[in-house]
Length: 280
Length: 262
Image 1 (tube, each protein chain N blue to C red):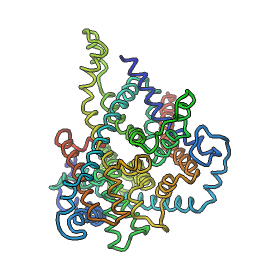
Image 2 (image 1 turned 90 degrees about the vertical axis):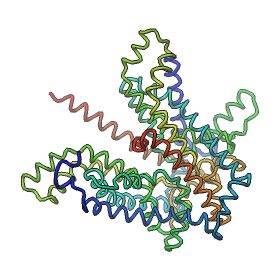
Image 3 (image 1 turned 60 degrees about the horizontal axis):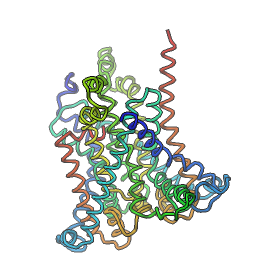
Image 4 (image 1 turned 135 degrees about the horizontal axis):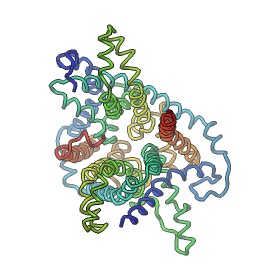
């Protein structure tokens, strides 16, 4: 498509001249700071792999990493379980209703993480609607805030739009005659969803799970504001080491581990499906 | 089974919507701490927000930073997008991946990277430092939006202008630019919102004199001291609602108008 005219197709110097400003900018203000993290992880306060050895051997860092992965897994699965019915309903709804549902999901998608985190603080607080309702029906008000539960619920809510949009994209494209013919050939409604809809939705499911998992791994704001101070995620440990202890080396080594985990997961997705589809 | 799925879908929609709308009644509440339903109603926290420099200054800072970021991002990304969409050259795949990389790197990683880097070049806690960092982080989304628009561009329009004797520069100004302007606007808007909402990097690289709104909100939520946070949340939510609903209504209206025509 791009090589139809001689002025455009030939390559040569022209594309590189057009790219030069952005490439120079990214090299200076993205690659250099990123490389600095890698360098600090082996050079601060002195050269060596001590920080990586510490991460691999002391119990604390491994537990934080394991906790983070488990949280990300929980949040991804919750997003899938909640996101599938919503995306399915959106794909099945008449156009006007589907558009209205899409407006709600898009609004959530664009609303600042901080606003949504604050909203969950109100909802789950000990003077919030849930605690009051529990008291009203005669039980002791539960301690919901600043627990693993509250941060998991809020992160699920915040990341759910990514899952819904991924699933809606594939569900909308399923030819309506396919589920219908399966049903007319005797498949039960559950069988249609399990054997026809789900396999066709698989690329969207993989897409949504990858996005949510990767975004959740590096989550900083919500676990700090809503989570339990005793069960930290890796991003808050990194931040704490820099802010409170100025331990750049240790923080950078954790950051490299976090980055490597993220890139490995994205790499696997890229080999299987192609990365350009992930954010498309 | 199907009905159960649809009902469950409606419940999930309520789960998505409820936290968004709850900030509105909270902002008119008289409660000094988190309390819902509100014990009483007033608009006092709105005047508190608009009259308190500890809130208005970070708001203006964030607006200015986001404006600069959106301009700088579009200026840098536009020529690069033309190169990647319209030319074939060796190394294109690598460049493509490089442009997407800021989206893949967790913000906390970049936060400590920028903290160290900006301190070295003496831009820590300055506006230029924040603008440069946010611009780098805005590149992928602006590139995705703009390249989607450019791929849909019908090049026979340009060829027609060129064959009628227009110079390449005139063709770009009078043909390419007017057709693509919604793409530029969308790319600029994505960059603006990305910068305006960005919290993690700003927490580490902004200072007392360059405080951004998300940083102020984060500190406020962390200390739980200031009910004004509900006002800010409501204003942000309403801004997003307008941004999302206006284009939907616009499209519905123009569809009706075009259908009304014979």
